[in-house]
Image (cartoon, rainbow, N blue to C red; front, top):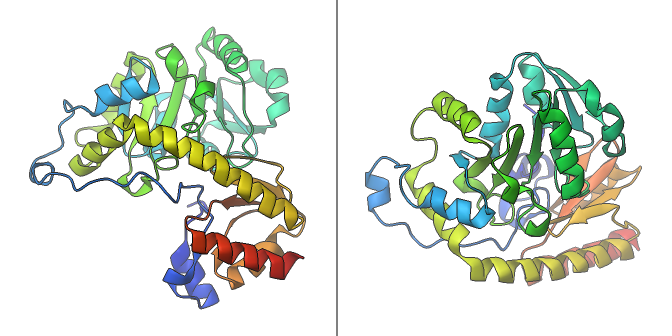
Length: 327
């Protein structure tokens, strides 16, 4: 299995710091996410039903006409490679490592492509996989750019897969409203912006023939009933969504200032994380871990991803730590 952020148990054991004393900045999850009310007892006592309000509310939220609810976008990432014969797959690198890993596991020919090299190599591949905004550097592709790539791929039976896990704070950049289109597959998740990673709810936005294939492979009861109930309520809460986008923008600016003042100016990011390239990234991550601050470390290239602190005490502790270590 690939390395991911959020491994507090491992960090606690390695550094001898109790779990409740860590500030976890390693996941990019909104630390002030949507807090669900208690689900009614009925959703625990019945099998999950697909004809509840979840799909309808999700279509309204994303502005699309066809989607499939899945157990987090990770489930879709693992399933999509099984729906094509052996293909040439390009993925924008650096990017979310589960995408190329899943395609390699199913014997597809996989190659990394730099963001600024996609245009040159597009006619050499059958499937293009990318994150928008990109994870981990926050890079954005325009809708016009992606639409042009989709048209070229779809004309010869290819796919464009766009992982929009970090898109909710900037919905104006999303391609969701163009769905359904043959050969266009968009992945969304409630784990990051909504902070509902534990609910394991995501969506595949695509044309109905592909969604039918996926539904048949997945079988019934993909998502637990309580998770479906919580997800529908979160997607319908437009007042919270508007407020969260504003608060996250302010928090992101504060994190940028903190990192820049410590000599770690971000090279990219989103409102949920900042991306720092540094040749001593491993040492910086180690120093912070000794202080009970967990960040996401990348080796190629040497870099760090910093999520947002969630409370006033965490901000104060971070600022004091950075002042002590980096000034």
